[in-house]
Image: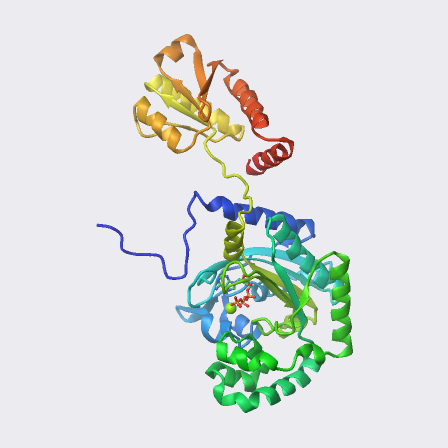
Amino acid sequence: MALNIKRPNGTEDVLPKDVYKWHTVEKIARETAESFGFGELRFPTFENTELFLRSVGETTDVVQKEMYTVKAKETEFTLRPEGTACAIRAMLQNGLLNEALPQRIYYIISCFRHERPQAGRLREFHQFGVEMAGSAAPTADAEVILLAKTLLERLGLKNIKLLINSIGCPTCRAKYHEALKAYFEPHIDELCDTCKERLVKNPMRLLDCKSPICKEIGKDAPVITDYLCEDCSDHFAKLQKYLTGFGIEYTVDPRIVRGLDYYTKTVFEFVTTEIGAQGTVCGGGRYDGLIQQLSGQPTPALGFGMGIERLLLVMDKQGCDYLTPKKCDIYFATMGDAALEKAMQLTKDLRELGYCAEYDLMGRGIKPQMKYANKINAAFTVVIGDNELESGRVKLKEMSKGEETELALDDKFIGNFDSIYIDKMFEQFDEASTVKAFGQIAGQQ
Ligand code: ATP
Ligand code: MG
């Protein structure tokens, strides 16, 4: 009977034939973060629900409708809907903020949000995120944005726009909230139910509503940049100067308020119009009050989260290059037990050198073995039967060209194969891509 249990809505399987795309993003993300002095932090998939209530904010979509909260025995947990709160919790609990500042960490995690699944919007999705704690200076904002930008560039992405805004500090935001209330109150009956509540509790959230009616009403709402205090305004001006210094193009978009409550001052998004409505590939900002809110010493901090599924959608669309997936370098087709055992030995030794080598595990005849070698796209094949064992010579066949080279089946076989393989690599690539190919081999071992 066929298994009729399917994966839950809004989740995805990644098959071995596609996983190289994920490996590409993960590898380049790690290398980029590490080149900026960030180290990887790993934390649990679930946390005490209260962590998210106290950080993400009770009036946000995430807390109001999207959290996966599970009760196990008598205790309640929530599957992480994002990484910042978890990362800060882990930094506090492990005393990282008592060490050299700024503390810089990155993570590659799955996140869980109960949303309506669609292209680029999943219930389990993945984020590459970074957090930097300890610096209040606008250089830190510029550095974090440069990291995101550098990664997008190294992935080969084009036409991704950077939008920035400052949403001020609690001081300047109080005045702005009043202005927003005054603007939206005459329209209160037309707003969606969530926004009616937001108007009372956190009017800035109204600007982040996805309902077309609320969006339309909010079109001419006052903008935060007109309400910034001197400190916030100065911080924002310096950030823009540094971004220009780094040659990073940006647009100031006063409508960006971000979906989570803990942001202060700088917020930013990297957006594209190429993958439909879910075009924000990266969102981040400063959250100077969060660490104190979570019972730490007051410590300014900032970070971003990048949606890996959305990145891959854009990379596929733009035809970006991925690191080449590892495929079978050499397949031994064998006849008889003695040949099989010889192939098993050679395979083991070749793998020690980093080659992907295979032999028959199905007890098939030579013809189906060669068919299999073709199917898995083996670069080279060797047939070993009684004749080969007797003569001590085999033919190494390069499958793409059909060319054969005769080799001795002695203890020089591995070394000889190694030199032929490397020569072929040089033939295949021009100089620049050869360097890349070797980088990949080294990276895969
Ligand atoms: P959106 O406005 O698209 O709902 P958000 O403001 O909720 O995004 P953040 O909480 O800032 O998103 O998360 C950072 C990034 O994670 C987003 O920019 C996006 O790339 C990705 N992301 C967020 N939610 C999802 C999801 N449900 N599925 C896939 N990726 C997501
Ligand atoms: Mg969202």
